[in-house]
Length: 76
Image: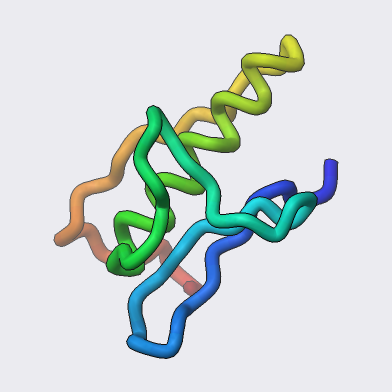
C-alpha cells in the first residue's frame, strides 16, 4: 500500500502530517497535525497507519514502545 500520509518539515523546523491524496494537513481525532515536534509527528503517523489498517480489516504491526535509554542492536 503506498503511503497515504507523510510527514514533512515546515519552514519553521516543525513537522506536519500530510494526506498525500488530498495534499491537506491530516487530522487525528479532530486535531490538526501541524506544528509538531518530530517525535509527535512520527507517533501521529503510526496512529494513522493503525486506523487505516483497522478500517481495511488488516492487523496493525506491533508497536511496543522501546525504552529510550536502550542501546541499538548490534551492527546497527
